[in-house]
Image (cartoon, rainbow, N blue to C red; front, side, top):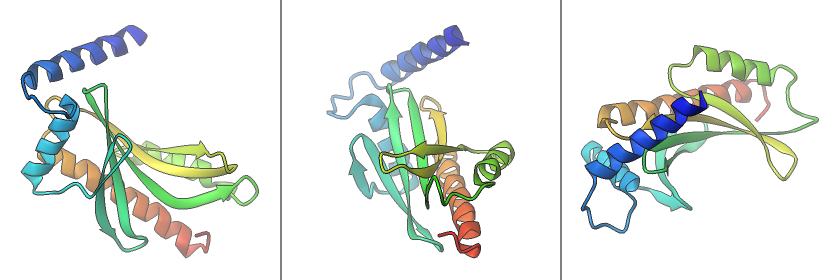
Length: 164
């Protein structure tokens, strides 16, 4: 599997490099590709945080749901959307991790990642990685919208149970 992943990374990088040769931009080739996709959708960048482009979407649970798009090696776009859930070791619902694993198995786009922050709390992020060469605006839109829907559904369920 390691050889196959290396092959994909090199192939993807070569495709992106050749597709965007001569752009003359200070942005990376992958960043330029994402900006091009956004322009074709008529979307604007709402923020830039570190190496990520941030898109804001209206959300009935949290008001604004942020989609982070991070270009990796000019060949991949990592999409991530955070849940507002933030549990300590002591107050995390016993069945919550298994609930997210079940959601992962049923999801068409993305998967949930549970992270242990320095504050000794768990945070939860829905993520999806797309190969940039060949990514079309319609697919970019579907990925963003599906990750937002996934995070909203999880947060809505937690709110109904009084957990957030």
